[in-house]
Amino acid sequence: MATPLNLQDQEQLDQLKHFWKQYGNLITWLVILALAGFAAFNGWQWLERDRSVKAGALYDELDKAVQAGDADKTARVFADLKERHGSTAFAEQGGMLAAKLQFEKGQLDAARASLEWVATNATEKQYQWLAKLRLAGLLLDQKKYDEALAALAALPSDADKAFMALAADRRGDILFAQGKADEARAAYRAAYDAMDASLDLRRLVDAKLTSLGAAPDEPAAGATAPAASAALAGASK
Image 1 (cartoon, one colour):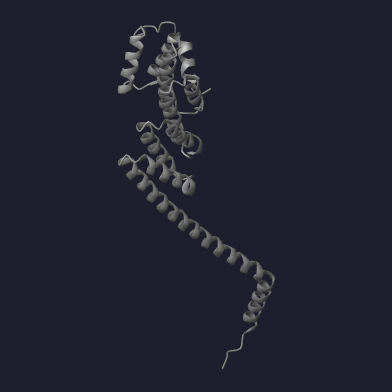
Image 2 (spheres, rainbow, N blue to C red):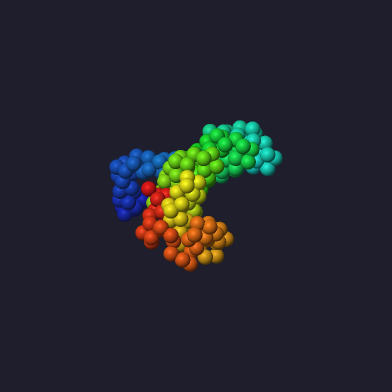
């Protein structure tokens, strides 16, 4: 037999009924939305993991094709990787691998296309910068000097010092190939000054400067300090 409610219990029950009548629908919808959001978040995480696994599998396939020296298969797998997972880190890394093999196989137009894709679509800035730097080197090999300089000029002003030093060195190579010795000296000097003293590449830049009659321990011939600074900045304009 049910125990009768006392007056205080009855008042609390009436208040609860009134509260639920006024806010029950709102609370129900908030709970439904919270559960839906939780489910959506879990679903998104699952999709991201699934996408990452599939992109990683394609990248592994591409890497094996590169190791085997199979340029045709590399191009096919990279095309799939771009189409299906173009916004992942695997795609930008795959582009750099594909470009390397394509260059080694003499497929310069294909290598250029791969590097240009990375430079335009990579989500990591460092991959964009590296792609532009390697693209400039490829264009230098093709004697497309103006295009090579344009690739370096596409480097943003916020690129870190190490990349700007590498860009200045590459710019010096291009200018030297054009017969512009004074401008090449300024670019090499800017690269030398910006590089860490422990880098082996710095000694190579030292040799380039010395061969141009501007050893680093001497004032750079025809290149004042402002000119050297301008050479370093030239790759970011």
